[in-house]
Amino acid sequence: MVISNKPLRFILAALVACLPLMSFSNTEKDSAHVQTEEAHGAVSEGHHKGHSEPTDVKSKIKAFIDHHVLDSHDFTLTQDNETGKYYGFSLPIIIWDNGLHIFSSSKFDHGNSVAESNGSYYTINHHDGKIYRTDASGTITENEETGHPDNVRPLDFSITKTVVSIFAAALLMFFVFSSLAKSYAKNGGIASGVGRIFEPLVVYIRDEVAIPNIGEKHYRKYMSYLLTIFFFVLFLNIFGLTPLGINATGNLTITFSLAILTFLITNLTANKNYWGHIFWMPGVPKPMRIILAPIELLGVFIKPFSLMIRLYANIFAGHIVLMSIIGLMFIFKSWIGSSLSFGLSFVLSILEILVAFLQAYIFTMLSALYFGSAVEEHHHEGEAHH
Image (tube, rainbow, N blue to C red; front, side):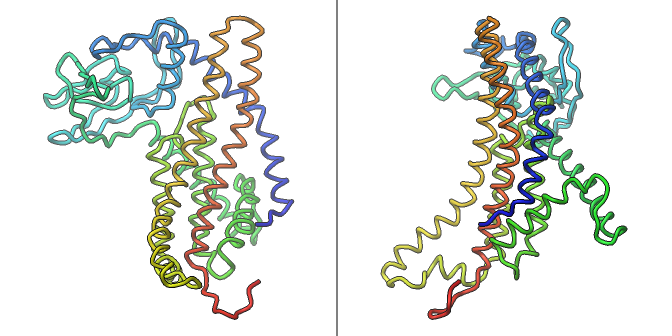
């Protein structure tokens, strides 16, 4: 695929302009949170059998990193290290356990309390962030062989921090691009307002991703999805680099859902030539067609699986590595080691911004490739290939 220079230069220029502010804010956030880990760790884990509160610095840093990459049933913005008071807002808990239970996450008191609903008791397991049914004391019994709780886990439909970030990204996209569309109508096809910032990216996805990979004939029916998936993944990736501590695209269920959408669109819009190449590949001996058919069919499911894992692994690993390097500042306890760790985390934060754009582009580009293969026209033997 040929990449034109003008849109690429614009993207690089926009990245360079945004790097210092975003990188610095991300570094400050993670450093401050590592310092307050001792206060975060003051939750009541006495009722969790087989686990004790981490006491050394390395264990506390590891516990905080594990907490950071997990989803949360409340949205905590910051915490007073002296008083232990949390600043943020509660989210609705919606679970199904022999009936529907709806209550506020404030009942859990950030995992310090047991919540009662209709005579049943529930608590949050600090190791996986999931809700389990318990007794009135909040006891969670873990299986010695598997390490997983033996308590009943209800169906959880709660509005978590990840869900809030998804709603925020959706609303942001709606207002930005509805503004861009209105400006086109008012100004005769000329963009204005805040949406004008994203116009080069829209043109880039159309001219350098959709048309080359899908073709002039079919690309229009996929453009709405490609633009939506690109900016949705991009905004969630950027949210993950802000002091809010959101890790939506580092959540396997989110990337799974996005990959399923690409999988469904690819296979539901595919033409007969696509399925013909899978089950009865032309141009090869008939015995080989029988052998290749199950392999090609397996590839249909491997493609969305690779989409899911690629996005999840890159974003998740970026969070882990960045926070681990920041944690080294509190392990070295020297101005040399801490300064080196801070400098390295700053550079890595800049790299993570590039990764945020790159992973959104890769997910969109591969989706376009799959769509292109699904609607590719059949070339008859003897027809000239260009």
